[in-house]
Image (cartoon, rainbow, N blue to C red):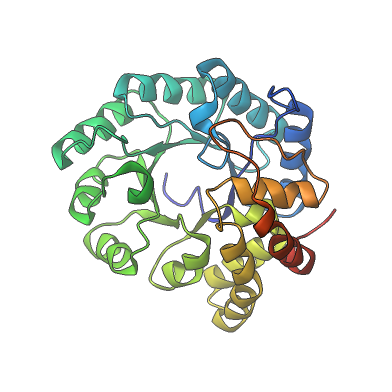
Length: 293
């Protein structure tokens, strides 16, 4: 199962109408634009898709809509995480039923399970589905770190095939790859090149919402061993990597997409639109790097 998810995988935004309802027509247009741009995979209902504010019914509807729009042209890695193992199971089972190609499962947040609890969580989910599972480690949001030793233990489960690593630590990535065979995807756009340089296979990207072709080109260059070209593209997109995180994700990326005419700049509370002080600097970066079409 390994190797299914590699290259530039976009963590796609969930567009909303002014009344807060999901704009499925715009979502489908975003999916089509990503596919036309060469994107290697799509993650619906991740953090960038504002999954914490989606109802269970909305979450399922977004996953189903993305699967339907993609039509098996590229893999769909459905966000299916929770701090409740039973709820994660339900989301993973729905993703499988809907036709997704895998499930992205975040470490349980807030309740801070022990390493033994994390092993039980992921093994319980993996045993209940045929889908490939990609774990998601983002200590800055969850309050816990999925340690390399725990990753290595979980990698022995056949359908736990990968990890989205957003600890910000190249040492941790190197330790994971030293201890086991597992697909490592960067969870930090700005660290994609160095993570791939030590053995990662791609990125689950926020930046790809705005500059999909450049992220595709950079990751493909790294996969081919063309470091010079990859470094050049990294330097081109790095200002966007910084600009899209000046405030909490996905606030800046939704502002950028609205500047590009792709979506309405609507978020759900407690997230609010980008502050006035950040708009001019973001607009300058988007004009320089963002991709139209």
